[in-house]
Length: 230
Image 1 (spheres, rainbow, N blue to C red):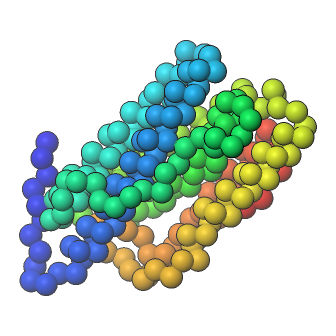
Image 2 (cartoon, rainbow, N blue to C red):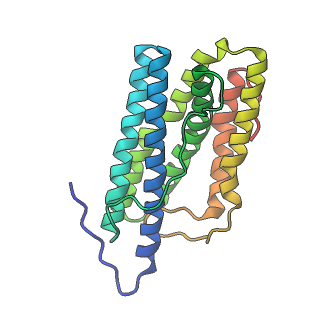
Image 3 (spheres, rainbow, N blue to C red):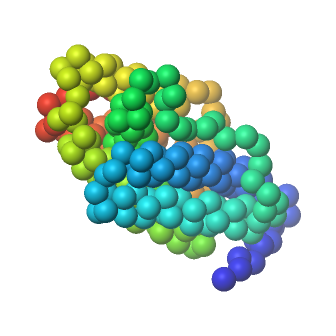
């Protein structure tokens, strides 16, 4: 259904802050939608199993839904339904020599690391949100994304045996670089603001991300015999 716009009480800065946060989330989800579409196409070209392709199709469809949910949140907070700005695109690394390596690299960095961290942050934002509509949307997105990181480790377990020892070392290095990049957000100079629409204060991001790595991501790589450091 349609969202009804919130009515600010006087000069309520929470509305503007919330709108900005959801505009950024729209960009993030749109970036994932495009990236996952490319990944699905590449997996299809590699001839992965029907189950693998259907799972990736589900992940891509989740991101399509998330873009629309975020867009409606922006409109509900008084913004435009046109996706604002330019997302940082995520896609296959065309510099890699084979389609297989491109898929493995993106599975590792975008699914195993990126989506696992994203799910944890969305879940924390859902708990923190006071507005019932924002809480419902964040809860839905968290539930969807709960399988994205897990799917990444499943794909990696299937694809990893075809890599040579040398290429596994390359993957460990690339994954460690991706982890450093992901944790870099905790060092950026943002205002430490909590508001009712689900944007977490930046002081809370690092402990959530570190805990997720220690509990889920790190052990997932160790189980596959990979030495990846955050």
